[in-house]
Image (cartoon, rainbow, N blue to C red):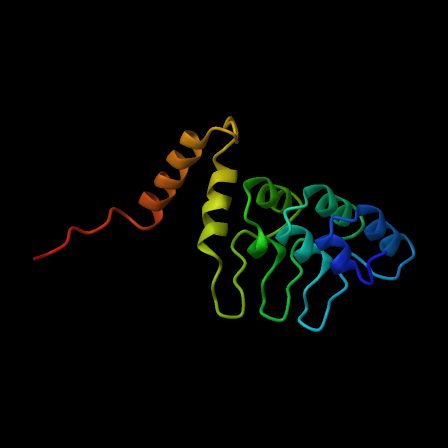
Length: 145
């Protein structure tokens, strides 16, 4: 058995995570010395089933670590961002440096505009990313000689 909930999440040991939560050894919002919670870990390790379990057990999708990062800052996949946003995460949340990750912004845009999108269609996703960049950054400037 893993010695702590973060290790259990990293090892994808769902039963151990459930045991930690059910015995109240940890909560979905427990924090380590860096403020890193099981919610952050599940998002970071792309474990949507575990993330949903934590949310269903009072996991806070807006919880912040010591850097002000929320679980959404750790998402690298659309489905993770979508799950967190649908559960109350703030897609505009800024960390202590006043930043939100560009990838998170792009994913949030995709989630908001993907009602009829097949998430396995890479061309459709690339098109949405291109549209996001045009809407938020604009076309690249031509180089001047």
